[in-house]
Every structure is written in structure tokens, then in C-alpha cells.
Length: 107
Image 1 (cartoon, rainbow, N blue to C red):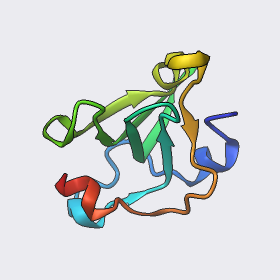
Image 2 (tube, helix red, strand yellow; image 1 turned 90 degrees about the horizontal axis):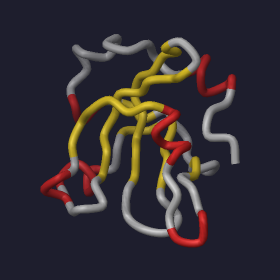
Image 3 (cartoon, one colour; image 1 turned 90 degrees about the vertical axis):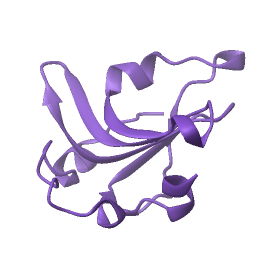
């Protein structure tokens, strides 16, 4: 599965462009997840950095809600993850841009 599309790249706001938007109102343009375990990445901003693409968003940690946080992550990092049976990170093709679910933010 292709994690990044031209449509997503056109739609996602540039890095640092939503700083004044309150956390609860930030809109995740794309959602990535680990199909073979825990871990979800909600991207609210992003832009091309050389050959890579850098995102800013909320990450639900596989270690539990105490380790979930806002931060930066790169497309190349998501593409490099391999879980059991060689499964990689996937993009939620049913996701439509929306605020990050409150249960994710509150653990």
C-alpha cells in the first residue's frame, strides 16, 4: 500500500502552519496504523524534506497512553517498520480529515 499520495500532499497543511489552532481542534489529514499491533500516527501537518516527507502529528504509542505524544515523524520511518509476518504500517483508506479522537488524546 502506498502510504503517501499526491492528494494527501496537496491537502496537508505545511509544517508549523497550525500552531495557533488549539490541540483539540487540530485536524488529522491522514491516519497511519500498525495492522499487526499497537501504534497509530495522526498527521496534521507535513511537507517534503528532500526525498522524504516530514509530518507533525499525534502518535498513539504502542507502549501505552502515558507514552503517546505530539511530535514529528517521517514517511521513511513509517515505511521502514516491519512487524510480524513482514507487515508494514498502513494508511487508513477510510479516514477522512477530522479532529483526532478524544479517546486517543486522553488515553
